[in-house]
Structures are given as C-alpha cells and as structure tokens.
Image (cartoon, rainbow, N blue to C red; front, side, top):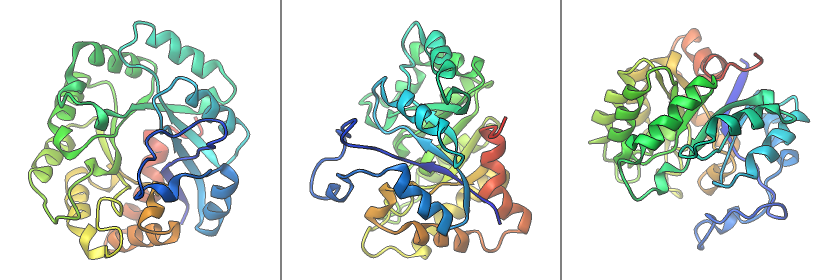
Length: 282
C-alpha cells in the first residue's frame, strides 16, 4: 500500500537554530535531521511521498524548505509559516509560491500552542489572515493544545472556505489516560465539514518509555468515529517521534490502530486523505 507521510520535520542546526529544543528531555533532538537522513527511512517503510512541516516561526525557514522540496521527488508538499496578522500576508504568500519549490507550498501553520491567549485563533487580525490563506488556496494546520480546541472550533466556523487540519489530534492527555474535555471538543471540531485530523504525534503525548498501542487506541477510535477515515491522515512526526519510538514503530502502531478498517479506509488514512486535502501533485 502506498504511504504518504503527512507530517515530518527537517532541520540543519548549522543553518538555523531550533530554539524550542531546550532541556534534558529534548536533548536527543539537538542535532541535524536532514533530508539525507529521512530518505532511507521513507524507503525502508514504503513511504512514497511526504509533507515537511515548519518548526520555527521565522520568515527564513519556509523558503529554505521550499528550496529543499524543489530538489526532492519525495517531498510532495510544504506546510510553512507566515505571519497571519501581517497586513501584507497575501503578498507574502505570493512571494513564497513564486520561489523555487513554491508550487509545493500546500499550507501554513503557526505555533498556536505557544500563544498565551487561549482565544488567539479568534482574534480579528488572525481571522483576516486565515481568510487570506483560504483565498490563496492553501490549507491551515492547527498545532494546538487540547485546551485550545474550542477556539479552533470558532475559527473553523468563522472561515468555512478554509480547510483546517488538526495536527496530532489536538494533543490529548494520553499519558494521564484522560479523554475529556478533549473528546467533546474534538467532536465539535470534526462536526464542521472543513476540518480533518492527523494521526500523528501521539506517542510523544503518551508515556515515552512505557507506551503501548492500547494507550493510543481510545483517542484514535474517537478521531476515526468523529472525522471518518476520509478525513484522517497518517503522519510520522519524525524526528520528534524518536523521543518515544522509531519511525518503524510509529508506522506499525498506526497500522495496528487502523487494522479493523476496510481496505478503502486504510488507503484513505495512509495516502488518499493527505493527497486530496493538500492537493498533492496538482
């Protein structure tokens, strides 16, 4: 079965610092993770296309990712960053799409999870930016905490022409085993037709050293029931996932969690949904 990895990262610390990698727990990530490291993993695990996702909120990273994508048949899409609140956002998106690799810009995102205002997504200047993203034909990735899901619901309802993709299923509290109020709020988001979810980043929301597939299952089952397989996509979240699991272990967990689905449902999760949502190969 063809696999699209809808969420991974790449960085070269010699080119750009990753200032979020701090403390002993994240120390294993404080090294380069390059395309040359990712390609063998993709080949070994049957991944035929991927989407590389921004990690830092600086203007320079997205052009670098686009330039890298321009050299790679593996990278089919880039989810980059631009300031949603900037008056010149439309021009900035146009500049990015005009660059080498700009035809692979499929979406934008912002580290909303780090914003102190839980209602940041509903600010008027942010909503204007989201409308500009929709007008440009791009997707918006939501990297939020579970507590920010209510604001995401409001934003998705306010900008119905924009497709919102929920990274890491909204980061539920898997390590504690809690499902509420995450389940209630995720179902409210999934009830909106302009939303989708990524089956990604779950192992690092679980206990890194003792997680089992059974720990992830209640959250995956909620997401599959709420969105349906046609609006769920697999993402490895490599290399962040390596804090808790190898690439192969993450992929196998996703296969185990979706093993009861039909062939069509699994094809959607592992390739079809991402291909359609991000319009890969357009």
